[in-house]
Image (tube, rainbow, N blue to C red):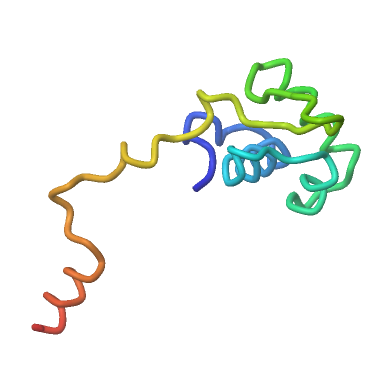
Length: 100
């Protein structure tokens, strides 16, 4: 899904972190999981996490002795906001295209 468009003008490491966190918003991620998901070195990840935390875009929680990082609610897009009920589905478009 990815972070909201308003947060996509940040450095690549920060956008990668936000996208990874939004994809796993419910369970959050550890720093090691982020390292595996984001294609950058650990130093950039650490500085990106610090910048994101300073800007209030991530939340850090201690869950049962494990530090987990979650995206702030304002970063997570509403999955139903972009869906227009009048827009045809992919299946409808294919049926129209092939005359089925």
